Amino acid sequence: MTEVSGRAGASGGLAALTAIEIIDGYRRKAFTPRDVVDETIAALTDVHAACNIVVTPMYDEARAEADRLSIAMRSGDALPPLAGVPVTIKDLVFVAGVPAYGGAPLNRGFVPDVDAAVVAALKTSGAIVTCKTTTCEAGYKLTADSPVSGLTRNPWNLWCTSGGSSGGAAAAVAAGCGPIAIGTDGVGSIRVPSSFCGVFGFKPTFGLVPRAPGFMPPSWASLAHTGPIARTVADAALVLEIIARHDLRDPASLPVGPRSFDARPHPLRGLRIGASVDLGYAAVSPQVRASFARALAILEDCGAWISADGPDIDPEILEHTLKPIAFTEQAAAVGGKTGDDLADSEPEYRRVVSTGRRYSGTDYIAAGYRRGQARGAFQKLFERVDALVTPTVAITAFAAGEIGVSSVDGRAVDPHLGWSPFSWPINLAGLPAATVPCGFDEEGLPIGLQIIAPWLDEPTIFRIAAAFEQAQPWAQHWPPLTAQESRESKARAKV
Image (cartoon, rainbow, N blue to C red; front, side, top):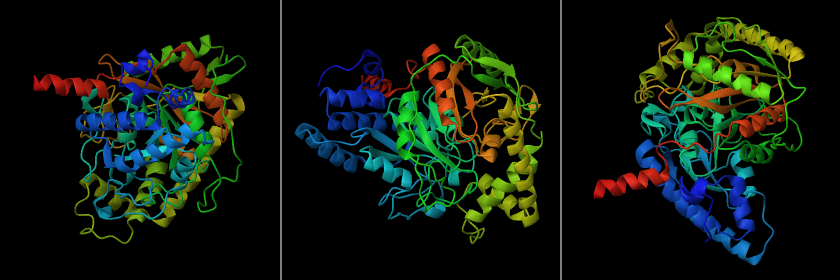
């Protein structure tokens, strides 16, 4: 096996390579799929011991598939585009024959017999699934802590949360445990952990990536998107090309044909970008505000025309619109369950379900009308600009084990969702959005920049993200806890 790049070697070897670097290494015969999978499993094992990122390992299956692909590569067989690239799957997404707890005690013992459409697409493309990653119970909050798998921690600071609910996915990519993770996003669950962990997370247009026949539970029914988490823009684009497809088994699936995305960096000349640091009402930490201002200057340097602009959104959208929809859908997912059935669930999850059951059908429909008004506000905005940028989250990662924070910059906020005011309005509108790392706070915790574009305009997001990535490369920054650091810490402890 030949030596890999210094960047990858410094952070965990083959497991820390990007998907494109892995594919190129196979082409050059520098290493084999078994080499990559063995190092990825070692990295997952080491980082899991510190951060708690894995729910169900699939290591034997991954090794067997790697061996099969290694033989095929030696034989010169034609191989699909992601052949031999490791990928993790969030535990809300079905993998046939593998438990799907979804963080919920109710699901202990449940083993699906079908792959979700996204998993089937990845397997067909040659990707190797290594494990299921942690999530919160039924994806109901923006951390990855659950009664099933416990606390998931941030590799940048083990005292902090990874964010969620795709927290295990984002932490694994951040710490160099493979290049690609599949997450889901109902109110920010791809973008929040990606922001907290300093990686690239992409939520495509609602329905572009099908969820059926394996998304559990059917909560966030009208809100949840499936998408990739990666260290680089190019890796995410490669994966989205594979998983974006029409599937009649998902009634929300959009009837669009195969798509390709250009992740090469180009100047942003002629691009009109609206910028809002608070959407007109949100509390935002001073350090996030400062990082956002620096990000805007970088985008201007890339050639974009930046204007202070944003959608005209009801300041009470959280209480008046999101909660009647999201909490009702969460309650409907456990509609036939009693209090005894949910006895092992988190108290806050039970509160969300109870609240959802108290909303009436009229409340839900009225919230849907207000949702349409918010969607209309974005439509009007995109008549003036080509894209919108905001902070991804109003704060950086907080203490592990907490559901959130109750104040931001001295202003009271809803501890469940109020500290992430930029994520869930985009789910209500069904828009595509990504988060790119754009800086660090005074404690060294990552800060994210959110990029939002009109419906089905993923190419504009990739264009902006690729230019920003070239101007301010983030993949060269690694958290203090990588697979290699974890191994070295263990070795020192034995001395």
